[in-house]
Length: 471
Ligand code: URP
Ligand code: ZN
Ligand code: ZN
Ligand code: ZN
Image 1 (tube, rainbow, N blue to C red):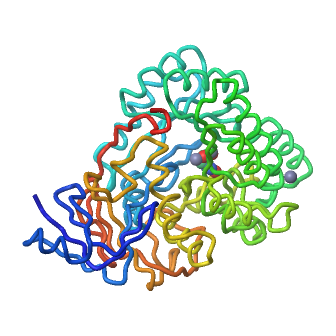
Image 2: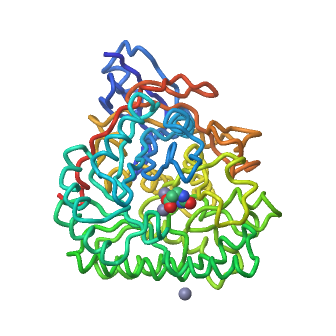
């Protein structure tokens, strides 16, 4: 078994930081020990990685990505191969993507098709959630087999009427089934029917520019949907509820109230909601703004709420448990030249940059380094049945390791570090403190300095356990 010793660094876990060496044997962490001790106990390591001055942290876990996702006639820009390679470049060693069942389709068939698409195509380990876009008797019956396939979470949509949308009755039935089966229930919480009205009215007024994408999805309709999802989850026996890609202060307040009341409610946000504003993105002239269409939308800096400040606070206080990316970039040709904002495929990319971008929260004093690890690796692993295999450097865990150089700098975007297949970046020209130094996936060095040494096909399918919350 190949042995790798990572020496001289500071090991940062969610629970604390300590100067320590890490011994990797084969695909697993064998030991974490005081500096110098393991070198004596384990002479003849095949490889020694010098992490002096660097942080040694569990590889990132991004539980919300959409690789090669079809939307109408187009598809998100990253294949499993390019998207997971970009993930590796960003210190992310696990992604959880989605299988999608739509109305009238077979759940099982949608999962098998998605597993087949990903098989042999990933550079890092991957799991799947099951989207249920057509809640009916046969879809509900099929949920009983998911856990056997290692899929222990379902995702429901209160947005996108006519596509993936479920009405409240369907949401309640699916939440009851999730409760019964011990599955985590993820919800895209926006009031899709109300948004459709606002959207049709805006288009009728000739307001088709990208900025209207945000104006027709007001934050209050994200808060309202979050409230409803939380209420329905309570009625369904307090099924653990996970609200995805939170962008709005109003929604965060609903989560905070539910958590204060002792409810099993969790939420994630994404880098775009922590950093970007309408003024800097969607409001750019013409098609430049179209590049930033995603849902929920990027919010205005001049709203009644300071959404970004509230989201940072939520991350600090644990009302927001996780940072994911909702990685779903589209190439320019697919975003641009559309009749109006409503015809632009939704989504941005960030899978490569989540660790880099969130580190800026550490630099700015919003988060501790431990909280950075917790929100980007440990908690997502715990919530989605991957811990302690992922999200920790404890002995026995998969040797998924990010060696992070806090003294380095990284320039993001096409003009800098960019490995997504998308031909543009929401992060163009952004320069951040810190740098991905070395990345190991199950004991194999996959990124070393400015070289990718991994391999498409190295990544394995992760059969996830039930969330540790449910055991
Ligand atoms: O705009 C987004 N988020 N696109 C991806 C699909 C979704 O709603 O998560
Ligand atoms: Zn969504
Ligand atoms: Zn309010
Ligand atoms: Zn998504």
